[in-house]
Image (cartoon, rainbow, N blue to C red):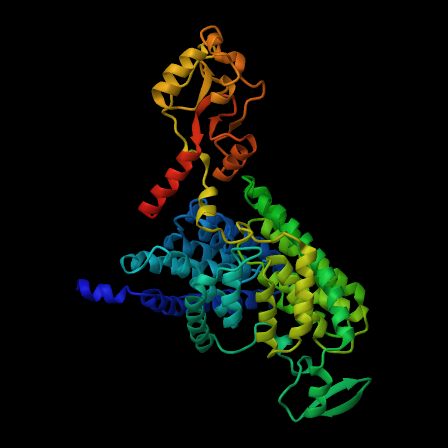
Length: 582
């Protein structure tokens, strides 16, 4: 048995096998969630009278809040953010018992018309299942496999809900960082994503998530004999070869249009990120009754306004109906701009009221609307180009995931518009800066020692240290501490109040004959340097380097002495963590 276990745990075999199993399990969970939320609940809501449609999101918010508060015992509404949080934790943990609660809250929010996306609960489900597999088969896995299975599960969730396996992989690799990727989980994520996709489409079907992207009239280089284009009530026919030559070449006007759209999407993504941060802050407040009632009333008002202006409540649900409406060429710029504002308002209100769902699709919707507005403003004559570019640019800017956004376009359109989409996504990243709708994203992957520096100073704090009172003589300090205990720096403390640090550098300027008459308190700096418990080791090391010292006192908010932090303690901590796997 031991020999069998030794063979099984060699290399990556266990984690790859578990990634495949994870992908299949996630697909089944997400298929059931999508069917109930979109095909059953939301479809039934949209067929009801307007007043019922308008009130449905409020009912959903009430139910979601009750589920999280009572069944979940105060669980937060976060979903995809939980993946990022767990990814960066030393010991990632997403309890499996919380998964049904989050899915039920997401079902109430999205199924009853909340303006959030299905991918949030999907990513949460995938991450939770991935960690559950780790917990179940812990003895077969290495320590580094924890985050790999977590990432593979998230990739499976995205791949299933969008029917885009490559997008799922790239999104899961990009999401934890703003300017980096988690490349170590690539192969397990590929297997989990592919398995999830195959399982999901066999359960749900192959229908496109965003139908207009697969519209033959919106694509390049189609493998068809002929294509009909309507223009001024006249039907013009192109042979397939002529159509390919017309569309596969990247026109200069397309590049300039992509640049403009990238700038607008970057500004929009930055604004959206600020609004999302505000909404998430509101969702964490204790005034949940007022929050839910105001949110529900606001969503009802938005739905009624949308129905009056567009003959349909386009603010209800993730936004697929809004995308289908906006790509029609007969819509005016004013109505498109109005829809852009109404959809943002609906998403932010749903989020602020405590709704459970994702932001991938809402960002894609805003991108499509912005792209169509820009295309009509520039009088573009290439159907589907600007909505597609807007989707890639706005989505990439909002989530700081440009590769995933462009890949989503490539998978959804069969490779169409990829080059201008790359331009638009790159520009939007530059304009958006460091803003992101996702929480807990780090800038880049940290190295071995860099990860240690993110720990709090309390992890290397020494509280069992001797101090000297301010009225102690220099002679006492030298004989008791320097010569007797080999200490080069000692904290000077009056009762519990920290006054400063006495070291050999202060004593070296004194004549030996003055040691018995000089008190250490007279040698202290009037503005002593000290660290706070909230500091990280990186903050402490930076302060030590700036002051050119090896020992730093740690004090609380009332200047009471807690202990000391030394460079030797930090190095010793690194050795201990390496030996214990901590």
